[in-house]
Amino acid sequence: MTPARRHALIGAFATFALFTVLAGQFWRNLFGWWGFGIIAGATVIGAVAVVVVTRPRWSWRRVPKSTLVFLAIATASILWSAYPGATALGLAITYATVIVALALALCVDWDRIVRSLASAIKWILVLSLVFEAWVAIVVGGPVLPNFADFDTTGDVPQAFYWSRGLLLEGGPIEGIVGNRNLLAMIALLGAIVFACLLAAGTVRRGSGIAWLVVAGATLALTRSATVILDAVLVAIVVGFALWARRVGPLRRRPVYWAAAGLGVASVLAVSLGWRLLLDAFGKSEDLTGRLDIWESVTALALERPIAGWGWVGYWNPWVEPFDDLAVRKGVTYLQAHDAWLDVWMQLGIIGLLAFAAIALGALWRSWFLAVDRPMDAAGAWRPFSAASLIPLLILVSLLGQSFAESRLLLEGNLVLLIVIAWATKSRQWLPEPLPAAPLRPRFDATGPR
Image (cartoon, rainbow, N blue to C red):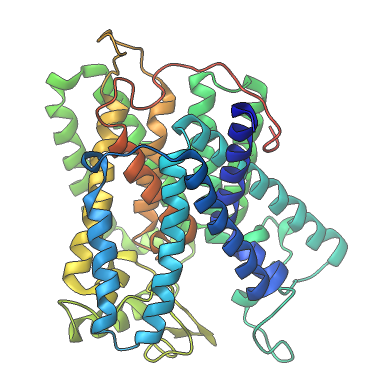
């Protein structure tokens, strides 16, 4: 196989893998759990094959040790787990997810990862809008998953529908992923990637603007208050990052003081205007049931605060205590709606500290890779590029969502967290750790452009 052919196949795999981890619910709704299992298994096998073929070089110095510590704690938790069978299943899923993430981080160059992520998001957004149009115009009513694992004869909760067919009413839409918050998050990730690549000049201007509009329209149609607030957080970080770039490394103290002041002011504003904020986003006082879920999970975590109840990742509905821990309007929710609370409940304080180390380490490296001027191998300064903001902004969006959803522990969000953590660490000492100047546009067939 020629190097060019191998590179193209690895790029195609990266696109498919990112599509699968971001839109896993699409495969489950389309083919059921067994079909999804086959696709997920094939993705993991593909990841292993990529590692075997490319044989990536790696150095222990450039390995984020916090990832290994977290996995070690999660693995060891089977010894004290209250549900060892569920922990074993959760570990298998987590390790499969991490294998895919490491294959991408170690075997695919950063430019290719970004372009594959952009292609995967484009496919998801386009398929979601086409699907919603088909449901609204042709079907004219709600659509259930093809392989429903629940009773469809009685009153079906709204959360169980694949799509409610509300596109012509202005939303909210669920897209192919079957959940408006998931679709909104994918749209926000798309907006970040498309905007940065457009600003860096790595895509055609017309195409970049068009895809940015698609992402923005999709985000608006989801009506996801959580992700809209997340988008505001991303915009604020963009402002501080550009400010930090402009003043340089020796005069950034005002930047950090201003960020801290804004954080304190935001907390005070939210506290004083809490009811107005809820009214603005049409939310109930219990945050759509989240306060009750947080209270139940906190009470459970306090029973085993140090080492937790045992790793499980995505809650298993047939395992106690998850079978009735978070039930609202006939729906048994299988997450704590807060990744940090979820980790504390499952792995205790020791697991929470390890997971926080992964996130904070990646955030630290992403920030300085975004705001410090890069140099080439000869030590000459290179111009800033908007493309180097991508890891930081994606990570900020993931962390922002993690306080209202537990997706950071699962599928696409976990993959992106691990990819960014390992990619930034492995490139930390390179002259040009991330693309620092506009690259020549490359147009291929890995996805719609």
